[in-house]
Amino acid sequence: MLKYRCLVLDHDDTVVKSTPTIHFPSFKKTLENLRPNVKMTLEEFLLYSFDPGFSPLCHDILKFTDEEMEFQYNTWNEHVQKTIPKFYEGFDDIIKKQKDEGGLVCVVSHSNSVNILRDFNENFGIEPDMIFGWELGEEKRKPKPYPLNEIMRVYNLKPNELLMVDDLKPGYDMARSCGVDFACAGWSNQIPKIAEFMKKNCDYYFDSVKKLEKFLFN
Image 1 (cartoon, one colour):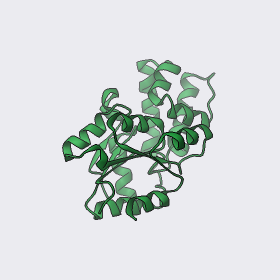
Image 2: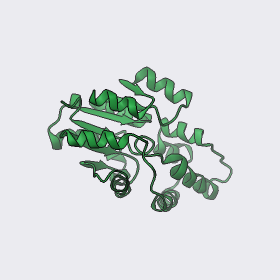
Image 3: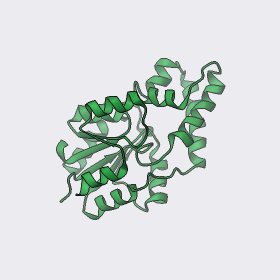
Image 4: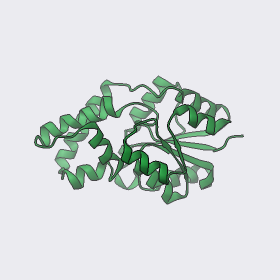
């Protein structure tokens, strides 16, 4: 019997290794063009992505205009199209076991759905049951509750039948707003501020994919 009927997975740095190889290099290129005086390390980028989140970083901190946001998006999209990120070892087993036992696998991410679908097909040969990506817009994008509420509506699920797995706070905030259990993908990074918050506040914290698998299926 499945512990959770539906696994709701973040994509970047939860299922696939993508920020160090795709998202951060593309954002550095954006900064070089739009804010050449702003220097940012990978750790600083991850901390901003953790809290307040990527959208507030762009809109509230860097004050990107609509035109600059479009430049940022296009620069990022060019990088994404060129590279298929590798998945964290062991995630193929989790996804296949969940599906083989009749469970659902949904993805809630700040990447575009078309790229998530590509990554799943290339890495796992399996497509998620539902995908909620960046293209949905601000009001339907995490940390807004829309993705989880829509999953529960479509599949007639209760909050205790879902587990949200994410490495950053926007996923945690979304899960909390819907009463859904949250597990931190602690294998993604060991930045003290992030790890400390997640260990203190999350329902579960896993520092390896293998430990998540054992929790789900043992």
